Image (cartoon, rainbow, N blue to C red; front, side, top):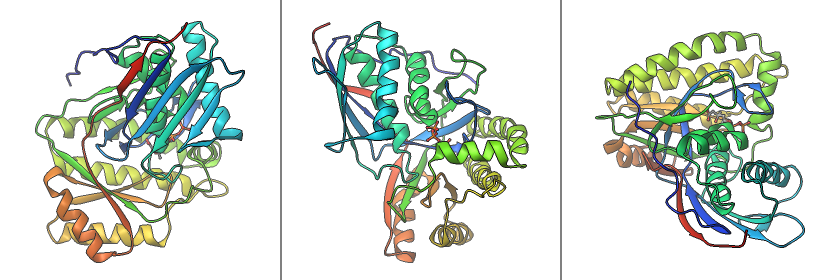
Length: 342
Ligand code: DP6
């Protein structure tokens, strides 16, 4: 497998304020379980598709205020949600050797915390905006490592299209990078069955699975094999193999959770109906594959030129649900950055 050389993540190095945009990514080989909770080092590598829909846009501004202010959708965050962001900003302050407070102003186009990858786009945008505002000029790998400290899956939203996150064994070696996929044009339809925030966060769900599921060791043993199979399928531009491996891997991830005590189950009856629909559509010749994350919303992988037809067929069968059509999208990028005081 050839990997693209690292590109600089930023074109501007002005200090003081920066706005970045990042898209969500959906894993085709899942990340589920940490070997190091503080550094967010995963037990296994994973691979995802960054989408061209539902971005997070985040502005970070240095201020003279006594404390950080964190806004999501214009509203101040409190409690754990706020401290997750301020602890992340502490990391950026330490990297930059600076101590200014900031205002973080973040907007999601998709529901937050409903298993629609808002933490991936959120921490990818925050990593780029915050590091730029503090005058750091991180390359893509360093940015991926930084985003990982906010949310593991965010390490992959730094990159265009398909990205592999190498599990690594320490902070340095655990990063994502782009996987070239010539001839493989992927699309995805996200279904929105339930936009409410989930009751068990992915962080807690994966911890419980690692600590209590007797099936988790099998996941750690099998996932590297599936990741290699997936990379080989991508190199061959073999859509059928990519879809088959992705669907199987998602089911196996949920199987490990069902073995936890108490079981972790993010999917419900509406999700199962969609799994059946995907199988039926595939039987009818519309080649598509299902995947699910830490929420009930099923994401359906297809060829890029089949996205519109797939969205139409889903809505015909399930007129009351929401759908978000998407294709491969760009990694995190700066929208603006302005000079500020240091
Ligand atoms: C099921 O990246 O949200 O979406 O690192 O604890 O923030 P933390 O978890 P997070 O987990 C994502 C889990 C997943 C699978 C995946 O995206 O690979």
